[in-house]
Length: 528
Image 1 (cartoon, helix red, strand yellow):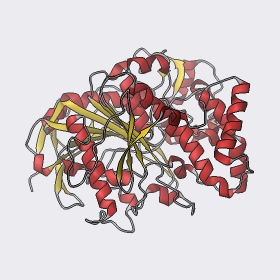
Image 2 (cartoon, helix red, strand yellow; image 1 turned 90 degrees about the vertical axis):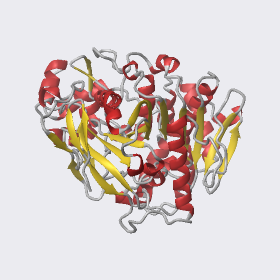
Image 3 (cartoon, rainbow, N blue to C red; image 1 turned 90 degrees about the horizontal axis):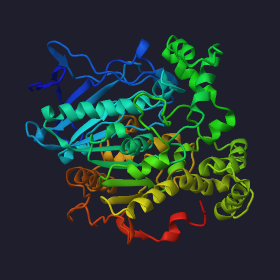
Image 4 (tube, rainbow, N blue to C red; image 1 turned 180 degrees about the horizontal axis):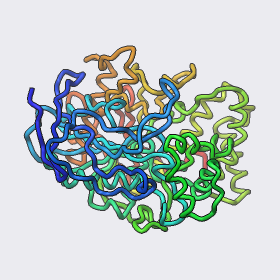
């Protein structure tokens, strides 16, 4: 079969047709550079434009992913600093057509791991819904988020990489048949919070038109990192540099091998800090930057966000995925950390308030009983609420009262048979609900989760039905701004947005149910 060629700003690209596990085909253009390699003197700097090339660039293979620590299947350092590449996927049936809706996927991974390449997340399911899908890579960990409180390294490089990718897409997607005026950005976990931060940043205004935030928003307590300047100096000190001069430290860290930085970045946190939030480097307020991504406190930026249609939600039991240690020692330490956790989550120095909240938590979730392994489901619900559910519900509650563009809220509660990342990490913990990223198995084909059974969910199964529902609603939203414009054979319920008069949300479980939250239900018994 022919290998099509497209012309972008930097030169010509030759793609490749690939087989979809669902039986169709799609056209892929992989490893497209959207910025210059951020290496040597460009390490810790804002992304620079990509270089042009002569002739035809082969786009049949993935570019490198960002260098990172891999846990499964074996522990290893993988990837490269030269990682600023994106991929474009076009369904065969809309190849050579124009003005097609574009969806841009931003991967998650706590700003430390993950990638946008199809080695991990293939487009097979979503691409059948007549949208053009773009997936991007961005710098991670200290290499993407190091902030020393000086313009020499002011933070948020990974988020600025995302902006650079969106600018490239805006300028070039028409060459692939995409509509530069109908771009939807979406992501999960740190990808979801990245989407929200892009909505708030002055650097990304006008680069997209709709947003889907899955299991992560900017106001989740893990989404912005504190003490990142101190962590930068700690990182340098691990390698023997004790200087307090920002320029000296950055010049020194630019000489340290990237793999050594990846290995050392986790060591800047104390054991207690790591238990509470094991993210040493991530998004920060970067007012010292010449081109600030987040120039002022989040509270100010939230009042000036993009007025665009939004889908936002979470899974029913997010925190299952993070319970990788069920030893008595770890559980007791986790329980003892509740007061410190609440202090971080509320950003409060009011000791009386923290004590009162701690008592409320222990009563509401644990009924003031001693903590045992039988308490794990309660702890999962508590941490799911505080890390994800409560911030998202508060966000929806604030947005619906603005009477701006529609905001669609969901709860993904479906527990199916797809081999998810969660099941690989559970250590025999029972599946009490849908965990963090479980919805990914129904939007994308994930090869690492399909080792035992590479086939997609069979037609007629509930898993296939959920996959059809999710991909269709997400694609409908990208096309029209409405996830359920009509009732059809797959979608049995009209998903109404949350409004000033009614806090609607869609429960995506064995069936679709449109439900309503009362104001009291936003917070439960926990007064945040």
